[in-house]
Length: 245
Image 1 (tube, rainbow, N blue to C red):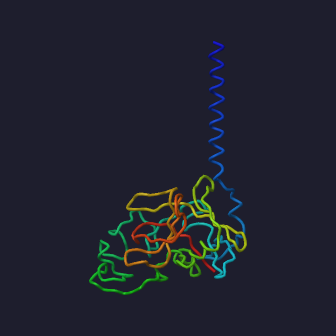
Image 2: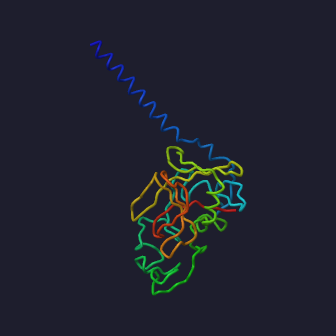
Image 3: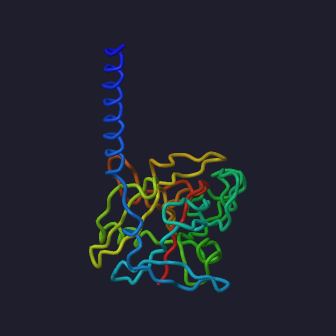
């Protein structure tokens, strides 16, 4: 009996040590909320609402919102939008996309080539119109979806690291100019009705097309080549991190 008790005691100590070590390993990736709460100011929005932004000290005077559209804290994903659509929806496909006739070969706005344009009509519009900018339509005239140039400024003017805020994986961008920070969650994307890559990748729309079917995005990943600009098919549902000045 004593031998059994000793064995159980040792086993309990081993399990306890393993759990403790595991928790410590998990915690090393966590950051505190006050890390992303520096430099916050409030900016007016639509219908008298105010939104929290961070001044990163950039030369362009761009102010970055602390949360995605539809979120109430930095680590929340918020709503997902197809490119140039201003409302979230249940399914994200070419069939449900606002600016096409049911497929990627029948796009009828923001068309750069005849192959993908409905009736071969090209409008050569590459930058999102104000009426199609979800940030502007939801938050007010002074707000917008970031440009590709603003993402490149964010990447080049910040130190960044993959970490967790309140248990959610994302990227902390800390300005080299003034030390202020923003957190962007790895919120994945929506393809049809499914949420894909949540916790592994973060995809954020820019306001600029790469091609008729694709738009530039900020691409965040937990693996290699973690932060860069890429492109994504515009019928997919992506979160939006708005900016203002």
